[in-house]
Image (cartoon, rainbow, N blue to C red; front, side, top):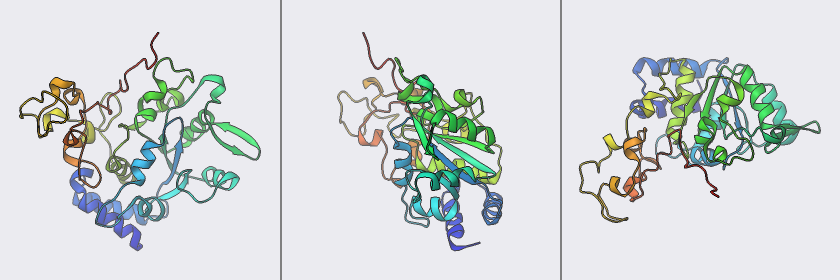
Length: 291
């Protein structure tokens, strides 16, 4: 096992509670990472703002691996990720096509109107391939499909009415079951959790919307530190509950109050911003254009 894999195990050990791992799991993860047959990762980006990629690439912590580069480049066998990989053009596409025993990570919704040409995934040997074509092809061969972010999981803002591109969620476009790591954007620890559990070969309990209950099994409001605080009467009041101002924490499911963001520094409500339930299937509000 090389240094980078040891570092990833150190990360997993430090975040065992968040990742839902036991000592036995850590041993299994070490063996999985050491195996030359460990799954390759192909990360496709469809109709989206690339926010979930940016969220993941902004992953930082004090212990190794200290950033996403160490995870993506040194730990995971990453075959394709257009934002972060060095190769481009036919060379990059060829790397994706050569992937075997791979985990497919999908970011972004899948446009279906106009023959899918609202989103071209790549050009290979002079021929354009839509995201719809590519995601359907790779999904049919993937060992596991992980959707990262609201657009891939549930359509997101791309699928909000009137939806001229005919954008749909990945599961609808492919007919395949997906593990949905919801959020706008998805928290980087949630993405690492999903990849870790897949590497371990663990059975992942999910809710009726394909979201892992380990991450999305608790209402935000029930674990919010402001739950018992006085109600806020206007925006910007510190340490006040914002439910009466429209905070959607009571209907949102996620562990944001405990995991927080930016290496545990802060989260939306602690910044006096109401929860908008960005992990919910109905996010965002629709239609976005009214007569």
